[in-house]
View 1 (cartoon, rainbow, N blue to C red):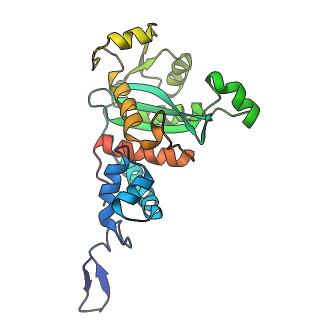
View 2 (cartoon, one colour):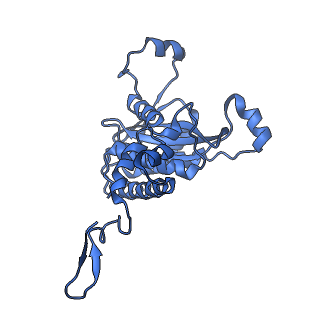
View 3 (cartoon, one colour):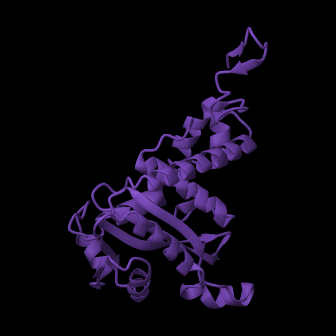
Amino acid sequence: MPRYQCLDCKKGFSSHTFYCTYRQKKPFLNEPIFRLYTSATTQRRLAKFLGVNLKTVVRKFLFLSQNAELMHLEKLSQQEFDAAHCQFDEMLSFEHTRLKPLSIALAVQKKDSKLIAIQTAQSHYQGVLSSVALKKYGLRTDYSHEARRKVLLTLQSQIKESCTLITDAKPVYRTDIAQYVPGARLEQIKNRGGRLQRLLNAKRRNFQDPMFELNLVAAKIRHDLSRMARKVWVTTKRQDRLQKHLMLFLAIQNGYSIAT
């Protein structure tokens, strides 16, 4: 990295002194880590591939996620999103073990699949493992309503004139949207049943799906984030790190440049 000296005051500085990469010894690793960590690559594989220590990858990940969050907040403050037609839903993941579920609320623009907001929260026990989880870990408080509230309030801040919001038929969505996005026109897609048969008969890209854009983004999250894959050795150990990883995905999905 080139360094310079002021001929007047004799103080030294570098080409990165006035950038957010100041004091970083390997700023050239920011871009490959940003691209690879949002392309189904794990942290350990990144360290091995780039020939650096695992701690270096973690530090770069935290730096990039902070940049992604700051840039997204700037875009929100400038109201650069089109909230006229949006889709809203939740995904499920877990931390440490499948007995500790997490909820991920997200809102997506319909016209270009850009993410307006995404938020994780602790969820209650679900499915056939509920009894096992209750016996092993005790009661688990459900904070999924907080994730929905944050996403819907962010969506409300981007509405300029009107908003048509498409969701599935989950009953609590109607209550939350009426409370946090009161001016929105809600369209709830009912479950048509026979999901397996419809999937078998469906085309590769089902553009007739009213929530195609959001389902596509959710599928990309499952594929592109190593910790979000269905059956892998990689698991989320901390909820806050999952949120940071999702912010990296939001940055690459929305086309942000956050490496410098």
